[in-house]
Length: 206
Ligand SMILES: C[S@@+](CC[C@H](N)C(=O)[O-])C[C@H]1O[C@@H](n2cnc3c(N)ncnc32)[C@H](O)[C@@H]1O
Image (cartoon, rainbow, N blue to C red; front, side, top):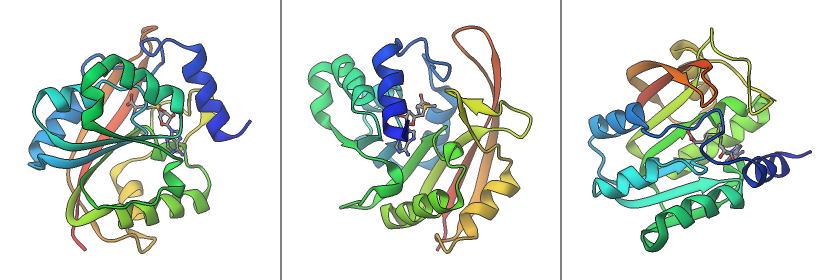
């Protein structure tokens, strides 16, 4: 099964509130976005059916986009938002193949980059990141910590700590990224399991 099929099937078969990564209140993401002081031009990469976009709209953030490989995931978020969905740019794409037509101020990725187990996919993602983010812009990434789970949604992932992530981001000519802040989270899944995530707030400095 390819990537797209996997994710379309997940969102077709599961209730969006029952997937392991579900959060009713994406508090750490919201806090880090607030600290970044970027109020517009925000893309949630692999946002899926996350309510982060609802919260950003409610807080008057502007020029918002959600990208996801799964059309079914985007539909869930659109239906939930109703008329407000027209205020969001919805992008159905594999992030590694995304061609941005504008540059964003803030790139948010919770639990997407960590699925890229192939070096060539990570290189493609980082090229897209460089093309899509303004210099001086902010990247917020959340991934499973080194002591965290080894799989997500039944797929292998790569665990990260700050050193490993920064080495990845700065090692492939993808611009220069500086770590501003990191926050650990023990995410409780809907079935009560604890997953160790770390969030990284970084600035593109070149
Ligand atoms: C673990 S979920 C996280 C969803 C959301 N970020 C959150 O925190 O609730 C991973 C999401 O990334 C999407 N995804 C996985 N691989 C992707 C890719 N290569 N390009 C774009 N989206 C992808 C999936 O469809 C799914 O919505």
